[in-house]
Length: 620
Image (tube, rainbow, N blue to C red; front, side, top):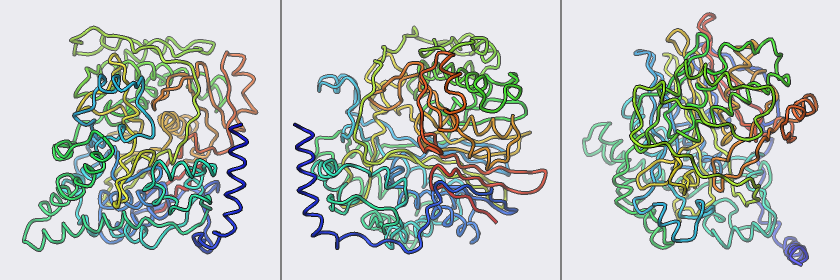
């Protein structure tokens, strides 16, 4: 009966459609989406940019050509991505960042994830009847992080003003940009769901559907974000006025931050939460801080792999590579059943430790030295077996190799059910940017968040749903607590060789991010692939653990393969005990790796961009 009602409703609205076709947005002439198109790597001598969208890449290049450095260019690119990829990586949400300073030779990590409001705790949600964090809810909005990231990056390492660097994003938001295939895919809802989206989140629908729920957005349509442009103009004007009052550049930048976290924008956020019975208060926003931290580091051969700390899943990458170091992967053959099995088991062993130990280090005792110990990696490597694990393998005991000792007894997270749940998503994924400037400085940054909860009316702001990466299990290291950061999936990476920058890389993709980065790295280092061919090579993806997003669905023993891999190796993997799932060719569910490699020997920079999305690399 329900299906008949849906069909009847769709037919009725289709009749109405004929009278509304004239209201469609215009198509951008000669628009060509780079998604799906194979290409050569970009090569440059001076600087290189690779981001999730060509417009962001070009904005960064203009900044570099005008004398800006990698941080300046990264801010400009990030803000453009917040427009062109706003349904996947919104302003002002998460933005975990790594910065390489050529002069000092050091990599710094900036904490680019917000904290839970002070009112948010497990008991409150349990009393409301929640067993997991709710989806599509204002209750899962984390405090915004990227305005803090932007200002601190510019104050500590940038040279240009916010008002100058935000201008390209304002122009794109006002003049419009062509809707790319990923945006269309992310908003590809059936008619009745578009109507539901409009009824439940009217302002979100106004921004992304222009209230025209009766038709789906088309590839190449001119798309604007006018309210977001107004918000940025007001922030930029605050900086300009502060400079006119004789304040310093650093003070003017601070005034932009205050305008967001303590001024009119915070008022708009708090009003939304007051009206919708949310949790964020004026005090939460005014007291928010990010901060610099020492990155996590591991080794593979002569390479040092760096990530943010355990408020992200970032340490998975160096841990897996360190576990695989010493195994003769090349002799197995690229993407052979044995290779896929071995790498997947290494990933699953590390993910078992992620689930047991990774959390906000300000709240959770994390044996990070033990987790990155080579002796611990050797111990875990011995657990790789002939057949599939079938379920998530047991976590290890890295405390044996850590100078710290736990102050409390380790407890196991409660069991997660094996289930697959269908859900409505209004946008998903993440995006990424990698930049190396003429002086050799670099930025690796993975912005994210989606309009799956109410946006802030009149501002174009999406606060995202990152609190869905908390658990309502007090035994879990990512258990919800006031002022705590969830263990988020976005995780930029960097690689040094003999103390010098060798690569900056990252990808969208939730739990697949670390896996895609690992496969790209091994393609280049172990198999000697051309970097662009390495990023285009077919991928595999283990799903043998609870998903990081609520409701944390779990497919024991599962592995996903892109189409060509499925044809070649699925039978062999099934023989080993895997549950094999077929995915499409160049499927963006397997990430979209962007990277800049520093070929010191030949004095050139190599930029690669994954055709699984509209990513683009370009340099000079």
